[in-house]
Length: 307
Ligand code: NAP
Image (cartoon, rainbow, N blue to C red; front, top):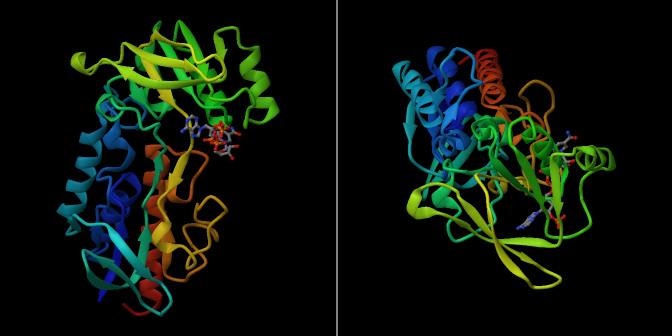
């Protein structure tokens, strides 16, 4: 029987591991299917406090893991395939084996939705990004493209006009899911060019390890063409990683965990941390803060239970 199992190895999970390990709870952290979380998909992080020169994303998250291990956290590879949250204690199945725990911290994050283009994944961190806040500043006076028709796409396109020489917003339809106010704001921005009824067929250039352009197609005319691009930003939504808890933990319609205050979920002893609950801020620093909150809640819960 474990005191604490933490699911997820992004900023939220690792920070929860640092705090619970330092409190002597010997947490087990299961790293999940995207070890390091969203930070492992970026290059330089310039807005995490404490690093005036910036820090490489994967290095930052690896440092957190080392810090947690220093205090006795066990970080193991593995993804939960099943979970049972019905009893007083909880159990999760990893690689075919059930592990039991008194508290569970769910820090499984939300994975960015990708287009599934042939070269897309090879160019992540080299021009392909799913986070304008993280990577926008690298595209000063460069050509930027944003994909999507929701609020995120509008927000990111507007934000990216601070940096880019031009921002093209590409959307597969001519109707927008975005709220009127966000759409109007983007439309009023002279640096944003809208390109509707357009899909992306590929992104180049893997041989240069850098985004240099994209292949586009107009869905009405079927015309296809190449366009030069330096920064290619996807804003087509995120998918919270809560599938294994479906029907057990309270989520909203899209699968984000509903907070019951602090880091609490509807199940006593099960806590949330990071993007798995947060659809608004989604920053490394807010995820770390949430991991700290979940750890403190778990610690207090165990103490009250006499462990
Ligand atoms: P979203 O509302 O689900 O929009 C996703 C967009 O991506 C849609 O326009 C969709 O196109 C497009 N898309 C999805 N899959 C695609 C694919 N395979 N190829 C091309 N396009 C694709 O997601 P979101 O914009 O991230 O917003 C999520 C939630 O957060 C919303 O509730 C939103 O209001 C909220 N949010 C609020 C703010 C704010 O108020 N400041 C900012 C950001 C997000 P279709 O329309 O054709 O399906």
